[in-house]
Image 1 (cartoon, rainbow, N blue to C red):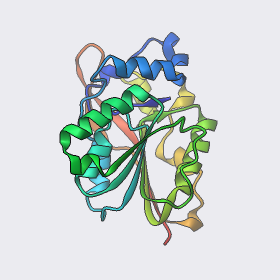
Image 2: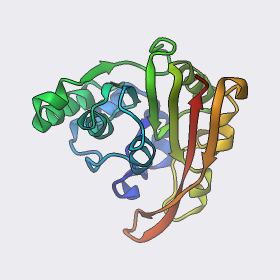
Image 3: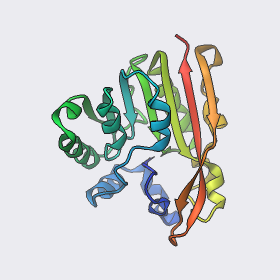
Amino acid sequence: MSHNHTDQQDAGHRHDEGDTARFFTQDFWEDRYREGNAWSGNPNPVLVQHATPLRPGTALDVGSGEGADAIWLAARGWRVTGADWSSSGLESSARTAADAGAEIAGRITWRQADVRTWDPAPERFDLVSAQFMHLPRTELHALHRTLAAAVRPGGTLLVVSHHPADRESSVGRPGSADLFATGEEMAVVLDPAEWAVIEVSAPERVGVDPEGRETVVRDAVLRAVRTG
């Protein structure tokens, strides 16, 4: 289960196809975070774009990694739950949050959980964000239904993934095509009667491929606002 923060070089996401099965084990992510500095330390830009206009409230950062998104939100007044499979990632997150100051760290609760089975409770959060979590389609839809249920009336669901088109670019993406969905494909789990806004997009940005060359990559974005 990839909870990647992708604002660093995309080359960091390239693995041999044979490694793909390990993505769905806790040991893989424990090893990744024990190596240190798996990601850039910057918040994901799509989160920054969509969360900046929102009034701070309660937020859930799913697959929180090394904590950049949770810390960015907390610095802007949000009360954040950062959930991740990896205890090593959460320990790194807590240290980084402490370095950012007691006020920011005090707004964040770190939660170790396998988000494929964890239920965060219905209608609890004003913002639920899942950035770059790749699962087989059936598990992905089940996760997105759970996350959608956790959004309060008037709250926002934001899901960002690597777009399937990236598999054809030089940056490449490991794993089967089943692990990559468009915004439209992610949105099928939402009942339009329950959401005032359902918006999908595929913004482009500059990434770096495994050979160090700049290349254009695309994100799959789903933003929805619950009727409220």
